Length: 115
Image (cartoon, rainbow, N blue to C red):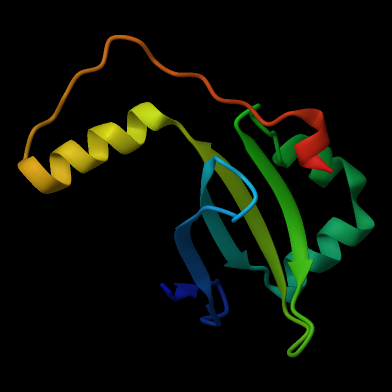
């Protein structure tokens, strides 16, 4: 968790992690950021804010989540991690080798996974 400070010096929570569901072969990078109340208010009153400021790429999916215990709201971005990225990171971390893979593997969310 990394604290984030807003304009009013309120510390907001941020979480970043990799995740692999048990029923899925794909690995995801998750970015979860607590949303300050002012932003929630803007999101609820201004649909243009949602459509213009949250452009989604084909390899990522954005949604909002309210925690059931403390009722805080989080912006969650799930990004599909390509196998090429995983291989590059494993080689870099374990052996100090930075491989330059010529082919970029493009992985995208299907419409079924986004809903």
